[in-house]
Image (cartoon, rainbow, N blue to C red; front, side, top):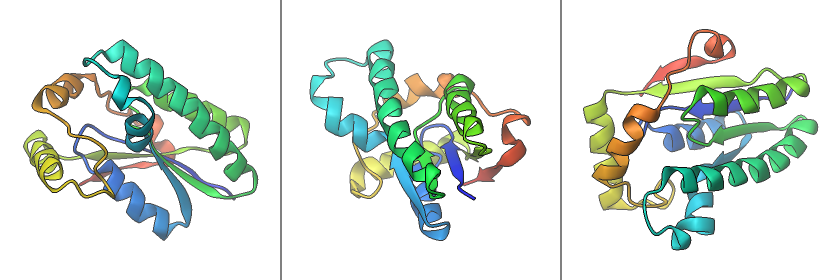
Amino acid sequence: MARLILVCGPTGAGKTTYSLSLSKEVEAIQFSIDPWMQTLFSKDMTSLDYAWMMDRVSRCYEQIWQVSEQILAINGNVILDLGFTTKAQRDIFSHRAKEMNINAEIHYLDAPKDIRKQRVDQRNIEKDPSVYAFEVTDMMFDFMEPRFEIPDQDELRYGYKVTA
């Protein structure tokens, strides 16, 4: 049976590192939003405009889903490291999976804010290409912090919380 795993958590929780490791463990194709956004849109971004950014994130989501759907249809496993800042974003993919008779697993990663901030600062310095797509500035970190919606128990019924 195919598995769809949605990885979510606030900035610096370790979503990409976790997703890459899990993809090897469960033999899954992993999609991460950061390199898509970096490759396709970073040169066009002139300011930190949330609406502009989310419009492009949505476009990437659609293309990523088209490929994911094909993988799931042949019983492949897919891990989506797409940020999933809001419940509404997670629900879109959960409902799409349900239409394929798949229960999406939500893996919620969390860590204290100070640890997450340290990780982001370290990632900005090291620029490890396996997890670094672009610099996350203090302004970006602070901007995203209140926007993350923690999954409720209903969302986590097929997944779980990971303290990273």
